[in-house]
Image (cartoon, rainbow, N blue to C red; front, side):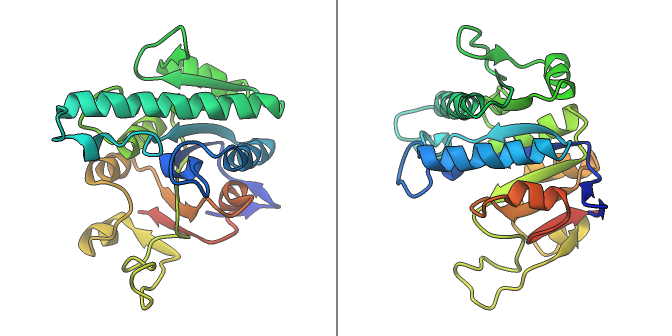
Length: 242
């Protein structure tokens, strides 16, 4: 990941945000100041000349995997989780619009009276027109995480990189919040991630990105301006590549 005179080499990127990233300092739900910061960071990235798509999780509202087995079938629990992702993209779209940035919320689960139904062709059209495309509903199917939805959409939309926003500033040999001796990678190959069982994304998402030859940049979303910094090859992040 390099830059040419400060200009990022990427034409199109997909940012994968967890639902927890929307909570900020709250224990649940959507924290408006945090959503505003994320929106400002996305706008900064677009101003670099990069086309931006975003996939958002729903764990701040409902986590289907945790509710499965508590009186809910897995398809029912996952469907509720998908609805949480729609709430998140509506909130993010509203904030982007308030800041004057063109944005379109789309969902893999059809609900046309609320947001556009996702199609690859329409999403590509929005991107080429400079709109930030906010993608909800994961893959549109139960049994798949929003990480897998992010990898799938990034591959479908011919993105140059998948930006995996996390709570830590890259990939480590162990969880740095639990192991102070954990070492951070600047760059790591897909093969090494598999060999050392490093936790980057869930198995299906990681395999999809690998097969699509889609590099993954893992970074901390809390830092203001972090998305643009990664796109310029600056800041702290780990690049997973071939």
